[in-house]
Amino acid sequence: MRTVRLLLLLLGASAVAYGGWLLYPQIDTTLPWLVGGPLLHDALVAPLVALAGLTLSRLVTDPVRRYWITAGLVATGTLLLIAVPLTWRPASAPPNPGLQDRDYPLELTTALAFLWIVIMIILILIHVLSRRPAGRSADDRG
Image 1 (cartoon, rainbow, N blue to C red):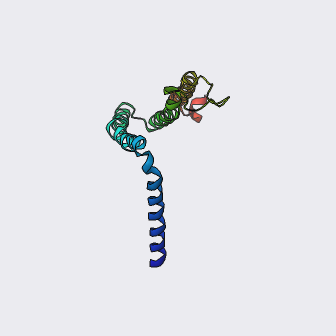
Image 2: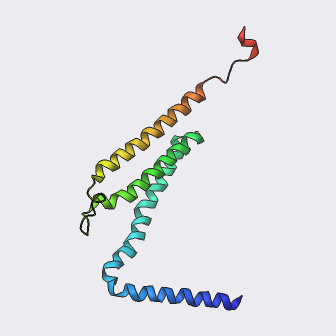
Image 3: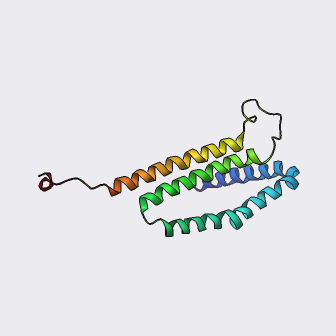
């Protein structure tokens, strides 16, 4: 077993060394991304997500409603993460017909509006169904 672990360690270390060798000529353009991404996440994204979670837990006490709002926020974050690079900068290569000739800001807005309309409909249904009486007993039928 020790031999297998040593071989896997050597294989992994050689893969890291080879990746570093390939990365070295591009280090001046890659270093800002390698350092800036985690710094941006830790300084901005993580505190905002924590603050949103804390606010959500204080404002929405019903766990079912909180679940749907959290799901909507996660889906919103995912859509923004995917769409922001496409809306923020122009394409770095010749456009691919059908892919880069879209109106990404409009489509992002449409997707977010549709997502939150569905979430609001679900929340309204939850509210209406929770207010409905459970059913009449045999004594009430008269």
